[in-house]
Length: 258
Length: 321
Image (cartoon, rainbow over all chains, first blue to last red):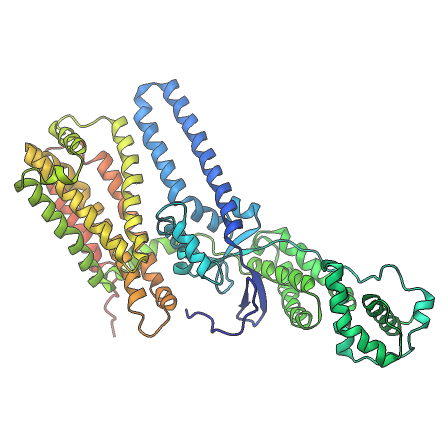
């Protein structure tokens, strides 16, 4: 399979997926920090599983006697082997690209084309941990991730996979103007706004992003356009952000007559 | 022209419905037919909403829709669950085919393993102290001591199981590392093949020089056809991977690597299965009390089996006209 052709990609850590039915969506790609935490959780879980089996083996040895001590050592070594080389693949296949650690951090492994990963992909990406781990502590893997736009380690590159973030999000809430526009403020505005659709859309985008901006940045952005609108309508412009909010209120009032 | 609030008001019910369907089951096959087709319809409608909203709406709404689309996509196309027939056809067909296709890498890998192995044997046998210069003396003596007793008594079941566990973990680890380090342009595989070949050769030579050659021979001959071959196969897979990074045939390095991925998977899974077999044999048959001629006869049979498997398994049957 060929890599998707290079096209202009947004400058952020998302990967665009285009499915065969031409559905396009973006996945946020998981960064190293989050993946390290997921890895640590999985590591702890593997340790706990090994501990449980070790206790079972020792108890079995005590109960039945020395005859089984070799058997239980062999059994423990096989468990250790499975935990070292099989843990990730078993989970990722059973849980559609997730291990318990990944699930806890809302991570999922998918192919670079956005498809769920198959057993071969999973096996390959997890075998390559042996190379990514070198010389110690996943040093090679971290360097590879730092150089790749989708934060892939060597195993991901060989298997054609990437790790994405799958946090649940809420639908954007309805836009409310706070404090609500007073009749006096509304009366100062013209009945029909001399604004184009694009301009109204830009105002709405600004108002929706306002929450996330600092007051200074908010004023700075509003001051870029509000004076233009004010002079176009012959209004006095005291508070740029407030003026934009009022314009939006009037526009939606006209669109939905009460 | 609709505002964001109007879009949300019109479409939110559908989005919620899709969300419920998607979170109800990890994979949609757990749902009934009508629910699945409903989810598929909602998912297609969602893709239209995404196009609209990407042009009109704020990043948080777009992120919500992207996330929902991603989750619906992965639920609708849920991962292929592990299928036994695929694994069966890998063993009966894909693995030997991949090996024949990559015969040159297999040959190179064998040479990289066997030549150092022979050098190791010769050095340990004929150059005084060569082996003890390279490997720790205590480990060599331990090996000689281990093989001094022979296997006339067998080893006891407890010890057998412990050793089988040890071989599984140790040898499969060796083979997997031998493969995985091939990602460094094949250099890691080259290193591990030479290193392991030299090591095994020296130990064999040392034990033979100490006078227990017959014992180590009868011990190794049983699992050798599987274990040593599997390490060489894993090495070949690593070399193939490294080669695809160097000789890209006009593709990007990554594209060329991806091209070789199916072959690599087949080779490594095949090698892993051989190693599991080898561990069982090494744990239970190799140290058994069977007389040496029987062990050698079985070893010959094993070698012939492996050779025949590599040569003939998975070949297309001659088509009758």
